[in-house]
Length: 341
Image (cartoon, rainbow, N blue to C red; front, side, top):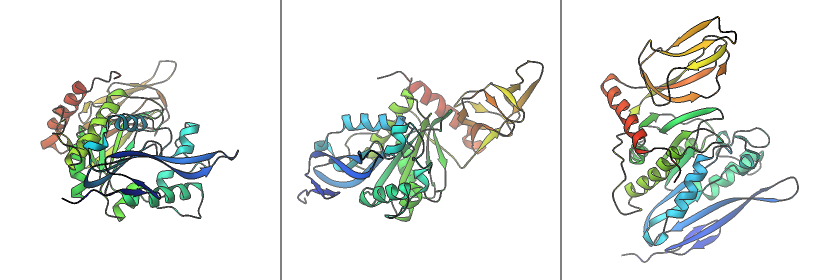
């Protein structure tokens, strides 16, 4: 057996069987206060993969930060094969401002691979890419829905990537959604480097969703077990993920108040009334019907909407797995009750 060696990151060495906190200088605030990328590194006693788990590329997406915090508290480097790198907050500027974006309103997840001499977002993406991404063999990227939008726990992945798809199944959410990479995203740069990455979406920005958090912690640990970084069997919670190859938003057809008649995770039948749009005076009511069969994986939480606004994001399944998908969501809801732990 090979003698374990130290892991090197950002000019520092982490001894086998140890944990080390690394602060990587990123930028400064206007008042000259330094801003750091803070990474927790767990280096195991045996060789293995290097898994990067990161959250808050969008600064207002808090569930992933709590998932990282719990993962840090539950990880023992002496029990680990390989290396776990946890970065709870990537977009440190957006997190401070409770904003999805950087101070210049750029989306950090459209700035990769970045540039050493570019704008703030480009520089931060470059630093994260050069220092952390390029040291990883596998990545789990944690997200939530946008502000005022909730997402059913789901994994987004390019299902054509066999290694990433295996990670997605191991994570064990009810829905795996096929999703190609977007230019400038972390997923796109990881794909170019041949690093399998899965993206966990669950909950709403600026809110804690305890079911989503618990499922996220167990999901990351399941991936680690699948990669042989941790011993033991995966915690399945009897959820059998199903793959959706497409999704679409159902948009409002009239202006007014929206009274939803379906919930997140609910099965839809084509033609089913999923909401009523009414005016504030109550003398007009317009039913909104689903144009296809599917399961609600995203929902707007604002009960007012103009014509054309997105209200329900629906994953569409082939008929042979449709009932299986519905059952998977039901089992997941029973397994993760959403109570704080």
